[in-house]
Image 1 (cartoon, rainbow, N blue to C red):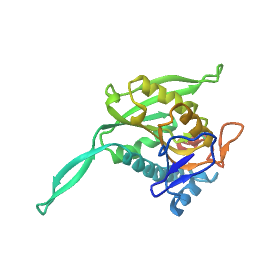
Image 2 (cartoon, rainbow, N blue to C red):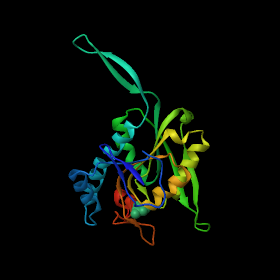
Image 3 (cartoon, protein in one colour):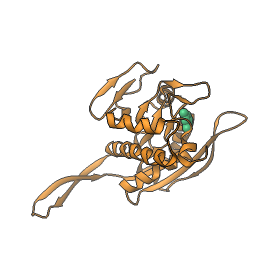
Image 4 (cartoon, rainbow, N blue to C red):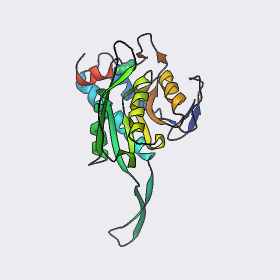
Length: 232
Ligand code: URA
């Protein structure tokens, strides 16, 4: 697997298949980021601290994801009468949260991109077939003309991610216009997603060792949704 960080490209042997270059953007593993992870991975973290600290990591993830979107030249006049040759987003942006845990990422996106459209997708594993099943989606009508940040803090087996991507493709969104934004990812999930969509970009703050027999990531964080929403 080839992993691109903001400062370097790292090649690991953590996964079986090799996704296309520049598809996995791992946040720089700074000491501060590791300290934030230490807080939220602690089984004794108090719920308030879990939420605020997750938010700080999510903000970094979304900043990185926004950097991957297309920009176009845009000039402005500065207060001292000069032209600043700047940039502005070349497309509209849409966040799509995968319910329920993905909703934890909406606030930070709204802060950074006021007025951003937010779609929702609810996918759950069917009790009989064990396959991911779409229960609900609400997406903007013009989503096929937008850059899409697909928001789900946990990339475990990749089943839900793949099902969510299929929903977006069904609405005319191109894979190249999607960035999957996730806090923790398992090598198995990254491989599963890239086996079907080698060009799908993933922004993540940690790549875990592997999944356990219950499809939880290890060392992991437990059930993110339960911890974030206080339902554990
Ligand atoms: N979902 C979670 O919340 N945690 C995991 O480890 C895997 C999936």
